[in-house]
Length: 165
Figure 1 (spheres, helix red, strand yellow):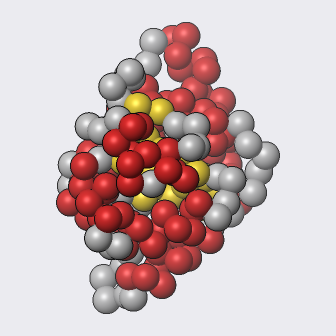
Figure 2: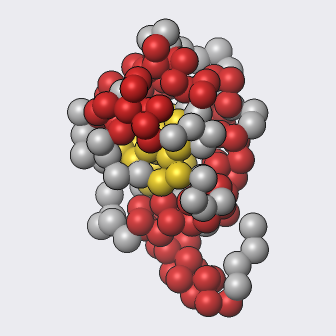
């Protein structure tokens, strides 16, 4: 991801703050990335890369669940140690919610907090509302209006502006 000098002036200090916080609190993350299993090698991985490039510390199952560990236990720790939950809402995630998959369980935890941000990607907020009115009621972002990297930069900047964990 490349920034113009003006964009880097806005992102740079947040990236520095995130790096300092990561050193001080190695188990804490700015963001927990909730996504459908089918998106792990596609849009979720892409969003993860953009978030990290924007300076955010991100809990992402593909990177943070060690081989041989209990998946649900690792997800539980990730949820506990993250300040904001990002829900990547795709057609696959909507199916996972309907079928009560793992993403639906993560979502249930995140909805009990005031720290969840839906990001619609390939679906509309109306389609999300039909499956999860509670998630759709949260202020979020859409890749229909902004690129995935622009969405990531906005989220990383918002996370970095929060007080230290």
